[in-house]
Amino acid sequence: MRSVHVIGSLVLVTIILFTFHLMPTDASTSFGLKRAHNGQLPEIGQQAEKLFDQYGALYRDKSGDKTLYLTFDNGYENGHTKEILDTLKQHDIQGTFFLTGHYLSSAPDYVKRMVAEGHTIGNHTYSHPTMPKLSEEQLAKELLQFDDALYELTGIPRTSIVRPPEGVYSENTLRIANKLGYQHIFWSMAIVDWHADKRRGTEIVVKELLDQLHPGAIILLHTVTQDNAEALPLFI
Image (cartoon, rainbow, N blue to C red; front, side, top):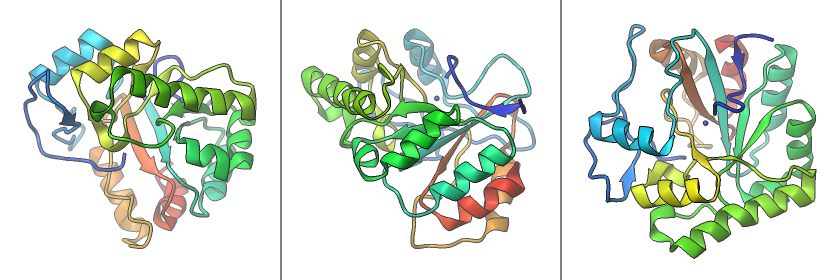
């Protein structure tokens, strides 16, 4: 197995804030970080680090191992997942795919292929809401409804990891997720890659990813762009 692989038991949307900020722990917050450059580690601020440690949330592997984790957010299918899965299979790499309920119903064959080829399925909620706006009951329904649909489709009993839509979270959502048996997984590397109709070029994608590389990186990519599908084999 190559060193780029699934987060698995360690384990990791769309709106990514690259500004470095401090966070009141009782407030709704969009995940943000000071990006890594030249092998340096990214930073999320002391308050966020403390909160993440308290609730077991991850944004990078802190073991020091020179390992990379490929994760993909699949809110909807745009015709590029097959190429991405083909690339991962060719290089014998397993990734983590964070899916929505819409993706389960609109692209069931790809979900079944992900499972068959050893990839991990993460919970991106059933309907992609802003999680801190939900009551505890509503949030539980979002996560468990996704798991029920995934079980019906694949036989997987449940997921254990969650990535909040648009990266928006609060201490309360971290607490509720933990109570239900879920671990929040964020990312330490990302690029602006969620605009399906705006091509930037594969060379730019690869360069931006390489510029952020660091040991233990959790890499967030979206599957909706042709750029990512073409850049992935070059990056690997």
